[in-house]
Length: 206
Length: 62
Image (cartoon, rainbow over all chains, first blue to last red; front, side):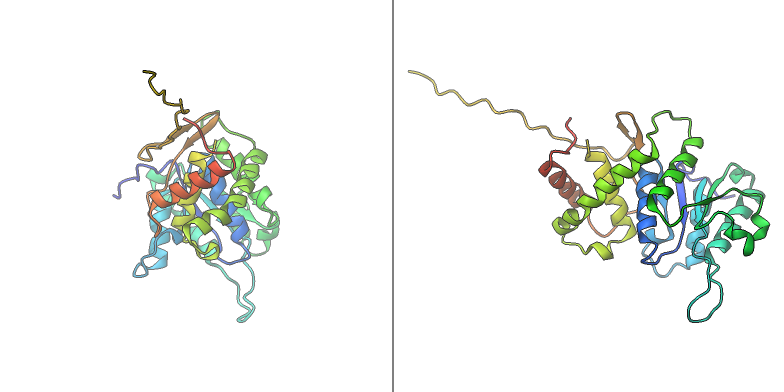
């Protein structure tokens, strides 16, 4: 039986697309998770190419009590005209983990789609779950993440989603100067470096 | 003979964070850091963050 990660209750697995268009949503979600006192985990955090991607994802699912599954890019591929189904597959693995493992029975998910009832056309079996709309808007995504995590923690020191988003915008304004000081290309920051930059910024920001 | 008095300088506030445990924050949930390391040394990131925040008066004071 695999041991539970000591940070299991605080780890938030983020299952989302890794394309440029999605980047503003992803970055806002990662920032909000940190600012709310949790640790975002993503398949992008490990650079080891020898690891099979699905194995990385399964390991993260096992280590995280909380998961954000974003199904908003479940659409037809421009070239093949076939549906892209990675995100729903990973949601399915997480649902299976919660269902079949007693250790993971307290798992909680935030499931996103771009529109609230779109999933009924392609994944109607998850009809009993609450699916949240982010409208491809980072501010709305931050608000939803904040509301969900607030419900998942007994802590009272929780600011409003608007304040978390305001802090995120402030961080975004500092990011180009930070990258210039570090002599790093803003568009090529690794997930781990981006995450460390958020941590340091939140830690030293007054 | 008059002794030369040293000009009193305000003590520099040095903010150092112990990242091995959750960081308490006023009216905010404690901050946690990911266990995974990137390619940029964290000390460099910290130094850059302090510099950028200090330049616009937003650096936390001890």
